[in-house]
Length: 150
Image (cartoon, rainbow, N blue to C red; front, side, top):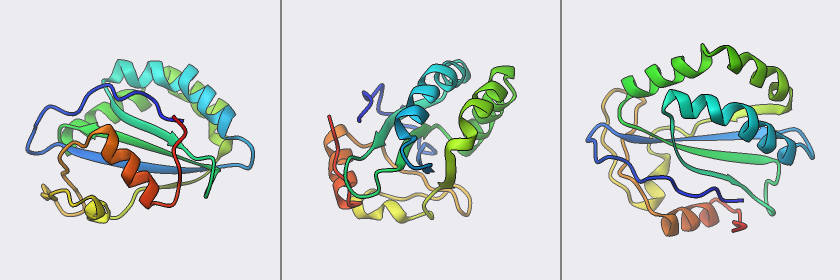
């Protein structure tokens, strides 16, 4: 599944892409995605999170969901994430979906070098990447061993 690209960043020199890979309990990916759309999406939209893409695969590791988010800066990320997780609706989302998540991962800084994107560090362990287009995301996902259902 590929969700539509809403935007491609604002050109901030401190902006970066945050990749999150969630491993979901066996057979629960469709339920996880539906609950996330229904309960989490309104919260993160209200908090101003900027979704680049939301992916799952039909081959390879089929019980994983990859989220790609754009943040203007680390401060922007911290502020918007705090706004979402302190929203009273967030606890309802966690109760409805948290049991499906087995593991959460964020690649180490520099892991996106495979796309030959420029990495600019703002702080240690912080990566700043220029935005990518949909075709590049397809290439990136294929290099990770998955296929994309469009």
